[in-house]
Length: 342
Image 1: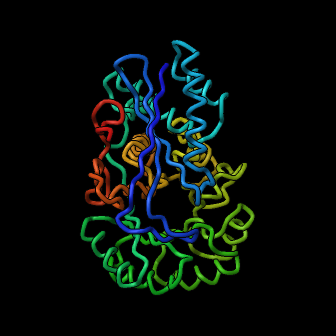
Image 2: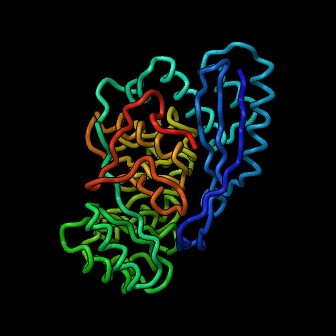
Image 3: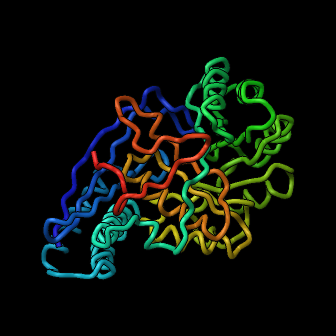
């Protein structure tokens, strides 16, 4: 089985300000897997500030996979993935291979990936708009534009400055009927989070994502605030998925090792009584398409909270093959991922 990998850099239209710094561009690695004319496409999207994994580390793992697969001959998809895991168990690199194998299998059957994952995938996935503007006026303007575009949920990064000013401005801009979500990327201690969320709750917060970091801190915070909590970075801790520590859990392909791992993670989350939802690590089109197929399959068992997958709109000079319309992204219906690979 042949594996080919290539790096691509995507620039954001403007930096995205987070509690761990501003992100101005993304390095992703595109992967092709196949034995003949039929090829499957995958993507690795490591984000060092988020998961501590560099693109060079991913490329090293993929080089090991390339050598291992070349020596293995004809393989099933499951065995190919296992050989890669044995060579290097890096989740973000395995995600690229897993996505490519699902794409290859679906293309061979001339069906969308979601049709292989469940009998009745949802036709679309509700998504939030991630606001990238840093200043109060700019955030309000961006939020108003998102509401006009039909988004019914917006996400504001907090822990980065005048949180109260920006959140108040965004709520005023979108009105009372749009869900307002916060993402602190673990910026606060428990006492800081209590003060911040008690203050911000007046603007009707849908949920606060990763307000503090670590299961112990999340549990302590949940006992002291009325705002619903979600974990993101903390979801990578041992036992976090099945802990029920938060009301919701943000799942990402890169951390879960691809579509297969994400579906297994979602099952654990649901068994704990929490709600799973998906988001990107500022993935490229291949990663977003793969996540949409996974989300559509998961939605067949019940609606998900808004997913953070409308992030291709944040990139400069990238034609978005998966635009959000009326607050949702339609599931691609072509074979495999269902989008052109750039």
